[in-house]
Amino acid sequence: MTPLEQTLTTTVETLTKLVETQSRQIEEQSSEIKRLTAQIAWLNRQLFGRKSERFIPGSGQPGLFSEEDFGENKPEAQETANNAEGGVEVEVKGHRRKPTSRKRESWANLPVLIVDTIEPKDIDLSRYRKIGEETTHVVEFQPGMMFRRAIVRPKFGLKDPTEPVERGKGVIIGPMPLLPVAKGIAGPTLLAEVVLQKYEYHMPFYRQIKQLAHLGMEGIKEATMTGWFRRTMELLRPLYEALKAEVMASDYIQADETTVPVINNERHQADKEYLWMARSVMEGLVVFFYDKGSRAAKVIKNLTDRHGFKGYLQCDGYSAYTAAYGPCADVRLVHCMVHISREWDKAMGQDPKAVSWVKAKIRELYHIEHECDMQGMSFDQRREHRQLKARPVMDEVKEWIETKGIQYSPESLVGRAVTYTYNRWPNMMRYLEDGRIRLDNNLAENEIRPITLGRKNYLFCGNHKAAEDMCVVQSLLATCRNHDVNPRAYLNDVIANMPYYEKASSLELALLLPHRWIKDHPEAGMNKVREMAK
Image (cartoon, rainbow, N blue to C red; front, side, top):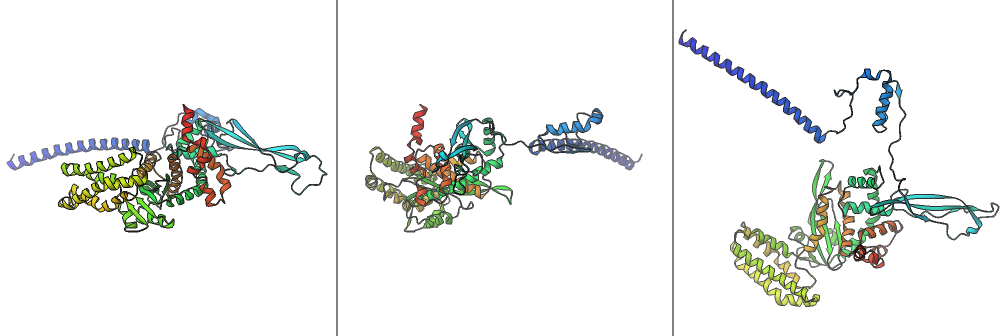
């Protein structure tokens, strides 16, 4: 064999072995691909598929019994299977089963604990005899129990049918009281509980439905509960508008904003939108507002302009507030010392000595405020004490920034803190003008926290309307908290009465706001509740 032939033979053997090796690898990889594909399909079914284990014809899934096991009784067996599936009508060859009634809301088994009997007024009942009655049931709630309230309206007919009577007065019956949900089963206490569970205890509707079932009211659909909630928001919205007007009538408010996820139906995802809050500091009133998720300066500007707000507006360092008002004479911005302090915290690792000096001056300002609190100073006394003690500290920080602070690069962490502080220092010094003004915006941030906690539970708002409804509820609940009002007692009462206030004046609505309502209902104060719990 020539050297060339030997070389070719060796090459052929090598290539043959390489082909065999690659073929074996391809076969192994194909097997692995099939295994992984099946595993992915299983995982997809676990994550997104239906969990029902019932047999689906045509799916390739083998049945538990073969057709031979049924024989001539196949239609009857099919009907039995359909019955087990919840009463859905299914056609079978040669046999059509009768439709069964769907599962209805089960409230008839709830006990009747309250009976309200309503008889006709301004009528001489001695001329009448009782000929029947009409009974309307509404479901009410008290903690740990659901029950029915029966509204009984006896019917009366004339004893002497020949007696002359005004038209329509032959048979009389008491007037039906106005209910929050016309011709609905939900009473005011149940509606109030739905609102409280959603926004005070952060429980989504589907969890509430489970809770109602455990208390004896089964079969409630989420669409039904959503309808109850929307009607409740229609009743409470006039109170919300009255509350908004009162907050803007103050001359010192704090404002803040936070994010809220809202479903975008076009993009099929939750967008990060913005919710605003304004708090009248002296009156303890809170209002949330929402403008299609916008965080633009025009949102807060439109609100204050519409209500003619004039006074101090305290806020964080967000540029929209400066853009909205600037040197506006009617609205005087006051910034927040806590936000300024946070900027210096970020720079601590870069220049601890400089940052520690500024932080010490900020602590000194808070110490002065603590002195005022401990001595029980009036607002005028506090203003004078600030002028004496706090103004020199404020001036010292300003001088340091203008002389030593400008030496830092604007791109450094310390430089950024210097810029942030210097731009807001003139507005920050306005707290020296009025003893009512606080050194920080913490009260406003505290009002935002329930929103933050809530979005971790119900995750998102279904649309812009849902976000607006959340503002209505959270405004009333926050005001209840600030005035020590039991929110359950408050909502129970106002939801029951709001159907009678559809044409009420702004003055009449203002009397129903939590801080005034509690004056006529002292038993609903949280202090009373705590005393009873002891």
